Amino acid sequence: MYKDLKDIKFNKDPHTANEAVENILAFAVANEASDIHCDPRLTDIVVRLRADGMLHEVGALPKRIADEFISRLKILSGARTDIHAIPQDGRFQTHINAVAYNIRISFMPTYYGENAVMRILSAQSTGQTSYAGLGFTPDHVYAINEALKKTSGLILVTGPTGSGKTTTLHTCLTSKKCEPLSIVTLEDPVEYEIPGVRQVHIRHTHGVTFASGLRSVLRQDPDVIMVGEIRDNETARVAVHTALTGHLVLSTLHTNSALETIPRLLDMGVDHYLLAATLRLIVAQRLVRTICRDCNMIGCEACGQTGYHGRTIIAEVCLVDEKMQKLIADKRPLSDITSYAKSHGFRFMYNDGLEKVDWGITSREEMMRVLST
Figure 1 (tube, rainbow, N blue to C red):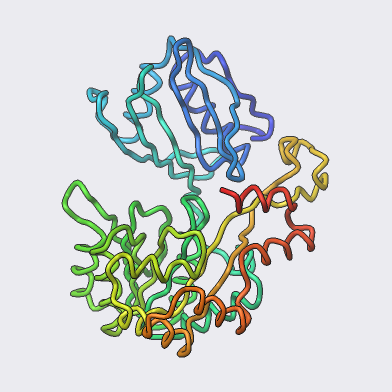
Figure 2: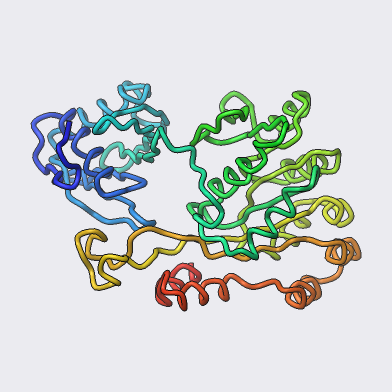
């Protein structure tokens, strides 16, 4: 039991691998890190933490404990200790100052040995919060709630990896839980437990994909289905047909903006008239670091001298109305759809970011850094 996590220092010379694992996990929690990277080099193992979306090198472990260190992590996570040449995944739970944390871990063979990347998730957290807490504006919240009132259709959240898409979808599901509905999720992997929701872990090694899992779920009498990600043409077509047959389908997609989702789905083989009939809402989002309230970007202990502490969403939210559906069905170009959306109050992510800069929530430099990637 640590008296104060903030007093924990990175131990560069642990006596044992177990001591190294315990120290790294506690140090990461103390620094509010979401991920831990342990990468072997010729003479040591470099350790980096991702906090507020940024990766920082914090120290290195001696090479003498490298094999034992990786073996200890494999034992904890249930991975095979006798396999070193292929990637492996695992997970385990640990307690730090009486708080439970779920650790998801990936092992990968590299030139200097196996590396390990750990994702830290609080076991007490459901990954859900309010829309305002995530960073959505009142206009955004209104549009999201209007779409969630529908009993069928397609709601999509887009953005790069690590932009908070799953958290947004889980927040949407929370708002639907108060209704007498059958809710099922297909996730890869299941990161947060949502009480009252049936969550399915997609296992590609067992032949269970998003598309095949979605077909099976339809036999479970669902009202609302969350598909972790639309990755391929088959999943896109099955998701659209599912939305067309009286189900509300929520999913994620990788596009740079909300409106680019429309040509992306068409390129994936979805027919214009089917997309027009099912699409209800598109949310595109990014995460930007928020200005540290303790130092106002001067740099202090609370923010690790970065000037930032925490993150918030900048987003663009498009509620698809009947006129926009007709534009899609008529195969009108994206420029026409964009013009119509702008004339009806649609705001680009850049504008949402500028507003948060004006409010002193983030900086212009941070906004531009995120939008340029």
